Amino acid sequence: MSKRFYVCGVVVMLFGISVNVYATKYPLWNVYYKYFENAKLVDLSHTITPYMSIWKGFGQPKFYATKCGVEVPGFAKKGEVFNYKKHGFCCNAYYLPTDQMGTQLDAPAHFNPYGTTQDKIPVTYVIRPLVVIDVHKQTEKEPDYHCQIKDIKAWEAKHGKIPAGSVVMIRSDWSKKWDDREAFESHLPGICLEAVKFLHEQRHILFHGHECLDTDTTSNFASEAWILHQNFTQAEGVTNLDKVPEAGALIAVGFPKFLGGTGSYARYIAICPPDWKYGVSIKENPGYPLPTYDKPLYYDETKGYRTR
Image (cartoon, rainbow, N blue to C red):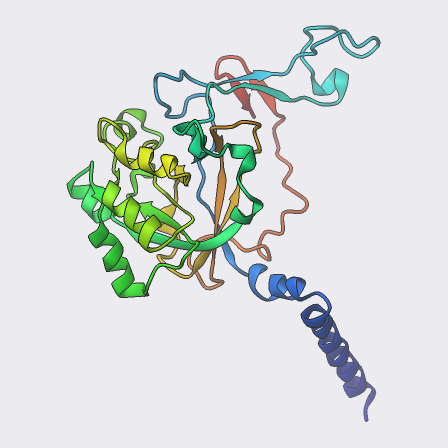
């Protein structure tokens, strides 16, 4: 045997051993390298900003440059803004008028005084099958269109029965108006009560989500009230549903753990097949190191947030 073929044989053998170790000793690692490393990831959450759309009753959030809260001898005076030059770091302070803003996860306690709070939502929410029911053609004709049972049945006729425990997102494409507050807040495409009940009682989903900041246009918030009083959660302010498949993807769910929270800002990420046309894979962008920019970060007093 030539030296070249011997070396190649050793490499193949070692590679085989490595894969076998992942498959037997660390099966979840094997799943990661086999499936998740090459999956296309799509962000379904808006960025929280001081000027984003929010119900006027809450008022707007505000971003500040963090100031020293007490005298720290030899380091910082009380009221002094932390900065890179003197302190070696900077940080932000936020006034967030409510936990009901931006891309969010509503806890039952938002409407239900006996309902679960945000900090009690189980870790089992972390990853689920993702179902996307597309009604954006309907909302183009009727801006306040609410998803109906017939829309759910149409999805099932095409893809099969909705999996129990899945997350169902209603695609209206209304999130494309997010940066135009007047247009975004002018209508509210959502989901009707009958459809909500069908998803939970007949298909036993984990929760549903939509692109607007309310579930329906009824005077008593019929859909949202039913959901939360039945001790279910729901997602609001979701985006990029036009960039994920209607079936076959997963969703990763993450949110802060606020004590007694009635809701929370959330990060939803769709995990799509490797050959999906949108998104980025871990292999394509491993995330380390993160990029360096050509301009320094600073707090812009006029804009009210940090920028470059």
